[in-house]
Structure formats: C-alpha cells, structure tokens
Image 1 (cartoon, rainbow, N blue to C red):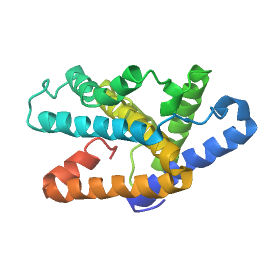
Image 2: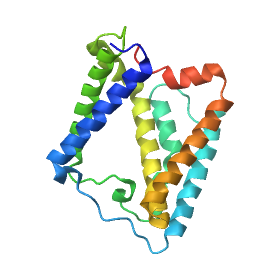
Image 3: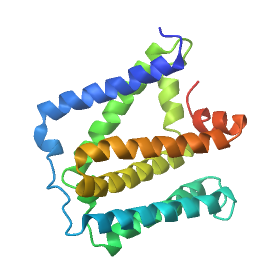
Image 4: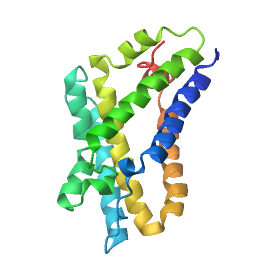
Length: 212
C-alpha cells in the first residue's frame, strides 16, 4: 500500500498508459494513424484556433461570473458545452473533419469500450495502491455516479480543444516543436489560474470529486 495519493494516482494513470500501449501493439488497426492535417495555410488555421481559445476564455469568464446556466445538475454539463462551443464551431465553419481533432469515428464504439475497461482497471490499481482507500466497488460507484457526468463532459471537451490546438500548431511548427511549446503554454496558464485562486478553491476545484 502506498501512503501518498499522488503515488496512487501515478500507479493508476501508469496502468492505463501501459495497458493502452500493449493493446495498441496487439491491435494496431484499432488506432490506425490518420493522414496528417496539412492545410494550405497552416498559420491561418493556428490563428483560427487561437481565436477559438480566446472565445473559450471569454465565455469561461461569463461562467465564473454566474452569467450562464445554474451550476447544478445537467445544466452544468450544458455550461461546459457552451464554454467549449467555439472549438466545435471552428470545425464546422472551417469544414474540417473530426480526425483533425484526434476523433476518428472508425470503430469508435470499440475504442470507447477499451477506454472504459482501462479506466476500471486503473481505478482498481488506485484503490490497491492508496492506503486507507475505500473498496474498489465503492470507488467505482462514486466515480461513475450520475452527478459526476459534468466532469466527463468537461474533460472530453478540454481534450478536444487541446487536440485541435496541437494539430494546428504541429502543422505550422512541426510535431516536435509543438510538443515542446504547447504543453509549456498550457502549464503556465493553468499555474497562473491556480495561483490566482484562493486556497479553498484550489482544494475544492481539484479534489472535490476524487474518491476518498
């Protein structure tokens, strides 16, 4: 048993990553590489993506000022859709495929099942690694409670937004430079937001949904 929650999280996420790598090698066709996104004017696409990101920040400010829907129940999931809608509109307006956001639809149902399976195994590893954790059944029930649907919507939309930004930066800068640049910018933005939040908001915003 590992005393620190951070090490338990590392064990859980590490299990998911290693499991995915093994499955990717065993079933390479399931995650077949899509043709690279190669627009005629890559920097123009970067500009559109940054404009969408600025719109997301603006709508997020409205959410922080309680100017969107009430932050309770399903309406909060709708809030997340509204906040990240600029990226979804970007794909529609620019007539770009979902594959340019790392969302290829081929055999998507099987990839979702694989993801759910890896998530369950990772939660099991988390409960085994964390000292004093509740049973795996209790933790899984908490994580997949209907009240936590908003977290799934938020994380999915965040990942789609990051994928859209990365794919377009990679088209303009190259994949290696984008790998170095984009995560650094995102970490800086998140750190500044974390520093501006009070101690109570830092704890509640990060850990309130985690199983105890």
